[in-house]
Image (cartoon, rainbow, N blue to C red; front, side, top):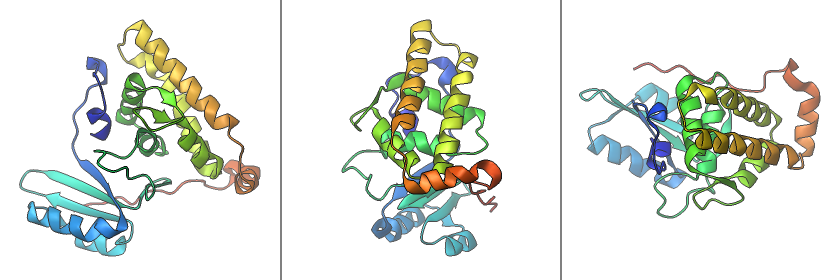
Length: 218
């Protein structure tokens, strides 16, 4: 939904329905968030929230069939995306770089994640700042410090690029998005890699480099 909020226009082929909402909060805001959702009619997933109290919480509004997922300080699924230093004032969402990473960190990328990634790059340039742009410097910095994140993000960028022709878009739009994929991949590759990245790269895919998110049921 955050990506949709940032979309200046949405081609019909990139539009979709949204079935749940994810929110990110700083650690000091977790208690207030819990109270806000309870007051709004949401019930907490008691056992899940107790087990993941420091990083994540789930709430459900059964009457309306709604689900809310709260991420505390960071977004952690297949990979961990730090957020504590990325809450910018009155911005309605986390920066576009982090929105992109929350999509691309999924090890088994599905069609809606590809669609959202294409929509994000349809409407926003790749640059070195957060001002209505995908901050390639931020993406590259995180990938340069974590080989596993680099492996997943670059593979999924390539995968999304190969599926771009699945969507009905004007040729100038298609060309522009292709260029943005290339720019982002190039920026990630040129970023100097950390010592820990290089050591982990020697192990490569012989060891699993991602987490498997817990399946949650009410």
